[in-house]
Figure 1 (cartoon, rainbow, N blue to C red):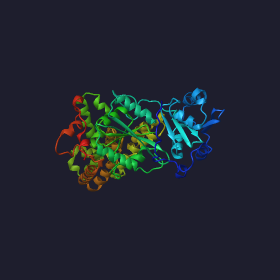
Figure 2: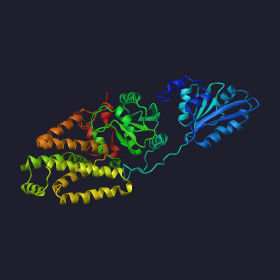
Figure 3: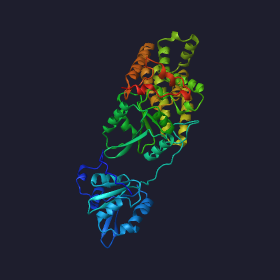
Figure 4: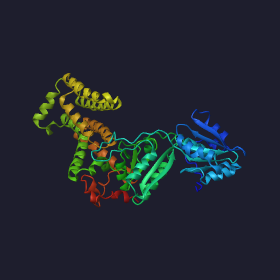
Length: 499
């Protein structure tokens, strides 16, 4: 028989306070939800002889009609035991004890929780004479099927992705991590959207202090609508005024599960096909899931190249301006002559020329991203080849500046994490400014400021520059520049040492 499930407390409910004081009955439910076209209500007579009736209510489009017909309406009308009840109280007790065969069943005595349930795709049976109701989870709305990744490509990794439905995502994680230590805790955020957020972690691996801190921050999120992950991100991060990302986003369940197994905490948001991972360090953003499917020596070489390319994208334009403007003696004489010759006829200062090119490359990338996918690649091709060649021919820019900026732009897109790449692009502009006024010394000052910013960031108590800031041991460096053997891979120890 079905055991009684206690009514859940109202938490971050989007229901107005006046609703909670209303008497629980079908008329008041209709009054609260208004004359909406998708609100469905029906009076069902269970025993006409004794006039035993119950009101059914649900939201069309959120529910599965087949579930309601087979598992709710048919038992109410056809079950012999229900047909013999003489009053609502007996009917309520029979249903509560399990005569309607349904997995997820809840009892309600308050209007606030009842309306919450209806708006969360539950079908409820309202007993007006008892001021009680019983709800059944009958979710059945259309959802996107699991497809291949669109943002994070993988050579040998799994091809599945997260979708907008949170229970599909939690089931995907359960399929990959079949462990009794896996914990999934739900909470509701958003006074209007009533968005479900799942906190996912491994009980035997997670740092309890870090987990408690994250939960406290989530409880303090004050927003009406949580329709974008950025609303939660900006509420839970430590440093609000920095360009560097403090949350790692991924659409790949395998990357998410690897992070969870390492002791990190994951967040799944209903309606968003990306997951969030915390805490993260700078080294995490130079790693991909393919690092663990390809030969370790090749992967280790590629990782070093990623760090080098990130440095090139950050420093090269500023270094070019500093050397060409203030420190020509640092360049070979032939190269200096070549740069000077290529700039003959260009009417703009070198700084303005490089700045325009850096911005132009970003404009092309943005245009290729936002425009229709069928012509997006063509826009980038036309902009890079036709317009670039015409600009050089018209002496608007010099070939040397185009080569430098193009090298920096391509290097920037070799960084696996796009949020980090965007942050480095902003700092590239900052270094560009410093180099224009003070040359190499300005470039050095800008780099010192950036490193100081990185060293000042903490994510849930984890230093952003971990494990490079650890002066006691080189153990944490094992999975940074060099990918270790998978049979000797260990969880990042900087997470467990937070106290």
